[in-house]
Length: 303
Image 1: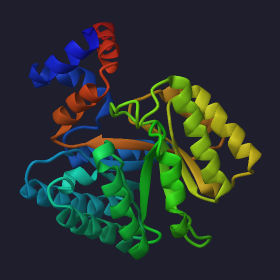
Image 2: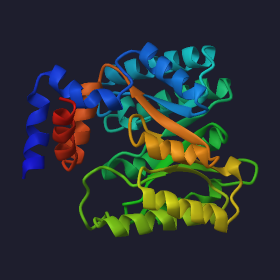
Image 3: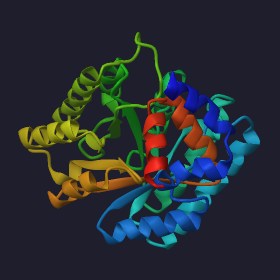
């Protein structure tokens, strides 16, 4: 009850207050902030994926603006020689308003990245978006086989079947590329695993299938048991280093991150930025109210 109460009232707090807990996890409001953070990571041998915040828009004018922001981001990041790629959320481009408009916007962004021989990751959002985002990815993958990837969420009961259902797109020359994460959205028990052990078991089952079928895996987790389980699967299937990477969120578990790097594994950090950080932060809290107690502790801990 306490967590839900905080999650519901926090959006009405002053932005300066919300920024106290958001700042460690968002690069900043401006593109320059994201470039600075990315360059710092690159100096440590860490790759990045850049994300302009602004999902669940209400108008197609917002979708057009978000597209232009991404096109500008790609041009400038490539000019600055950032070692990284790009992530986007289809609802930022009107997925739930007009899926054809959304597709055309994202296609233009992927084409821009492809012109630099780079890559765009299509994020997976909550369950009403799942089929739409798989459909969108399938169309993009056929046109841009080397330049687009997708995210799957291990807590959804359907995920392994969805991965299997896209196997016709997987080839030796152009392996399909997925980020596998646990998932953060609150979903009903009929469609999502709820227990920690169930989610972790499903994560490793999904990852094992990916390794067995020569799918490139972005192993996105901050959970130490899952990281240890991933090490075991990498060793079991002798997965080459160019067929997987570990991925983490900006600002989360830096010590664990460095332990992975020290073992010689590739690491990529998700770097979100933009003026819509407030909506992003408060939505994340509503999606996962358990974060509330950690936020309150962090605020008091920081004095």
